[in-house]
Image (cartoon, rainbow, N blue to C red):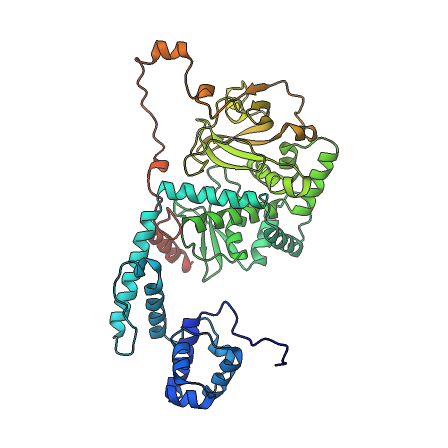
Length: 487
């Protein structure tokens, strides 16, 4: 090492507890005492003790000396897995007791010394895992879900809903399977699946709570025999593959689950509608002042919602267009939303949009009152902070009709088809006088004579279903895989 080179330490992603356990395991296997090893590497035994206990990070030169004294390689000492089941339990206990949840209880720390029986270690680690699980279940409330949604939406807004790293990965895969432009065929989906090392299998007994189940041992993806609920079967396959292509691990909580779902959806859309040809098409349409979600949908043979999502991915990054997107139920409830154009979405006290009711004068609700609700609806809406133009389309699904809405500020409408629409509305929401408070005449006539029986949105009232993947019964999935593992 030259004098100009700073002293090196192990890579930053090396777990010190595992590194220390591997050093101790190798030392004991070689019959060396701590003092003997310290003498060979010319270091104090107290320093080596701290390293073995995961409390001190050794410099690379010292790690090399330790490896030579133990007759092993540095790479072996830095392997990520614990050297034994016992070591894994000791590490798990140490890490559990280091968490703020345990430290805040004021309970004594149990040292995982050699005198502690393995059975006791198993019990303690199991209890910590159950406490963590219960705490996670308690936190997975509707409020927690709304906060997670709000935080995720802010992160998406900060990057204009554009994920360059996912675009690059999708582009590499598209190139590898020879998909340049146009619709991705079923054969193309099979090519992507094979490229990522999986096979597809359609079955009639897929667990009801799942769209697909993946057998990682045999690299099989199980899908329903027929598509249901209006979901594009290509999108389901690509979304599933996205989790593995993006290196997702078991989600650590609901916020992580949401992030992974957004990334997997983005990955699927980027393969169905590759960035380069999609941007080329959109730039041509903008130059002709003829942008239309309908045309983007038709060119790539996807659903209107997928095309609208993809447009919001690319519009700001490549077309310099601020946009907003919504998926709204027939009852006015917002299911998905995104904006970077300062449109005033309704929010709750946590800043969440999902579950709120959109203004009745906005295009996403007005479209349901059209004589032909399934025709594309264009509308200008005058709001407190300016005028917005929207293009809205109703899609029929197994869960009912939903309005898919994309809008831009008035200054950018010149690039879109449908800008000549005479349809115009005014909204002063969130002012209650806009649409939340009934007209005085109606209120006087019915205020004391009406008692509606509300249809409760039970999914908004219940806690998020527990489990690594919310709402999925692990036993049902494992039994399903058992049935098919031998076929």
